[in-house]
Length: 318
Image (cartoon, rainbow, N blue to C red):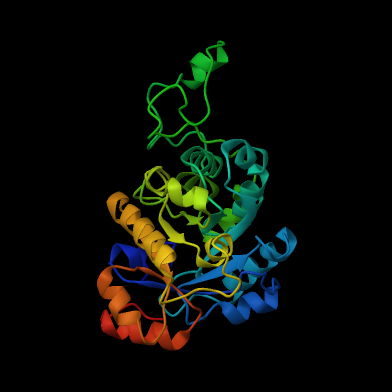
C-alpha cells in the first residue's frame, strides 16, 4: 500500500536507491505511451526537455495516460515523473526570466523538475522559489517583509538577498494550474496546494527538485549550490563537464582524474547537505556504488535495477 504520492520520495525515505528510465532528448508524449509506461520497471521516468521538444500538450496527455494505465504494482497512482527544463541555471536573472517553464511543467502534474547547468546558489535559489507557492514558509527568510507589509509598500527581495543567503525568498508560483495537476495526483485542489512543495524541506511535500552541476563554474560553487534549501538530489554531469575539459567522447567510470575529483566533490557536498547523489551505474559497479551511498541511479538499465534492488533487499513492488 502506497504511503505517498511520489514513489521516489517514499523509497528514499526507506534509504532505497531509485532507478530511472527515459531519454534526455525527449520522450514519446502521448496518452497511449503513458498507459504503456504506467508499469515501467523504473521508479521514475525522466522526460528530457533540455534538448527535446518543450511539448506541454503532449506532457499533459502522457500524464493522463499514466493515470489511465495505473495504478503501479506498488500501489502508487503513477510512477514519478521528473522533467528536465530547457533553461540553464547560470545565474538568477536567467532563471527568473524563464520561470514560466517551471509553472508550465508543474501544471501538468509531474512530480519533479531538473535544473541543468546549475552554476550559482542564487540561480538555484531562484529555481526553488519559482517552483513554490507563496504561502509555503519552510526555509523562507523570516526577516523578509510579510505580505501585508509589502502591500503597504515595504520593499521585498528575491532570494533573501537582504538577509541570510542560506535561506529562501518567497515562492513565486501562482495558482491556476492546480485543477489539472491535482487530478493527475488524485487529490483535491486544496490538498495539492499544500503538498506540491519540495521534499525534504517540507516533510509532507511530494515534489523532488534536482540540479545538475556540469560546468567548471558550477563545480567551483557546488558546496553552496548543494546548501540551497529545497533540493532533493544532485549530480555531477559527466557529459557537459567532459566537453568543457576537452573530452568529446562521454567519460564514465573510470573517470579521468579531473572528473573523478569533481565527482567526489559533488558527492561530498550532497552528503553534507542531506541530498541524494545521482550517478550512472553498471552491473560491474552497482553494488559498490550503493555501498558508497549513491541513491539515484542513472543508466536506464533494468538489469542494474534488479541487481541493486536485490542487494538492498528492497520490499516495495516494482
